[in-house]
Length: 212
Image (cartoon, rainbow, N blue to C red; front, side):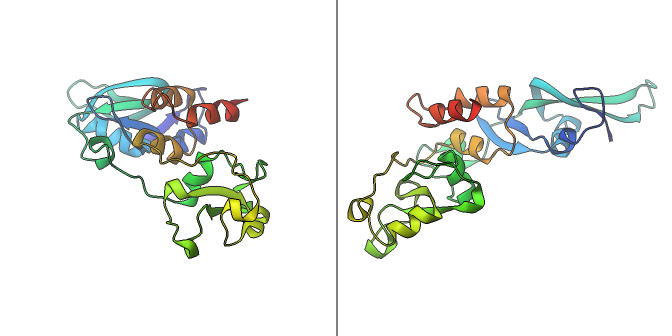
């Protein structure tokens, strides 16, 4: 199959890079997939339904019996048959893996000490309770910090360094983690994921800040 056109009616880069949100039959978010995987699932008959904004239209070969060309519409979200085997959708005690990319996005690319926003290359992972003092490298003990504040704090707690922590760290749920992993989250995908966030999720306010 070949990519024919995007939502604006012309060949465009977003058609190749925009991620599709896959959910399971019960409606739980599962993962991000690319357009190739979305097409494969359609061809295998694994898609229960597709919804959301149209991303692109793909044309394939001609059916020998009908004489019609195969056309697949790829939308921003699709539901697949069966229940997900992903532990994040089945276990309430699931803890997503920690990495700087999702940490910085969780904290809205803000230094949690000075409050300024930075590009990712100017940020670092700070352990609130330093590893040298028995702290752990987990979501509830790390925040985003600019390099200057991280160096100033050094191997001390915020209290020991006389620095104020601006927000309490938290471990994202699986739906929140799916959002954090998204490269370019469309408005309808964001709305769907937010519906699966805890009501008290700090991400809700942070997303509103990003959109301002």
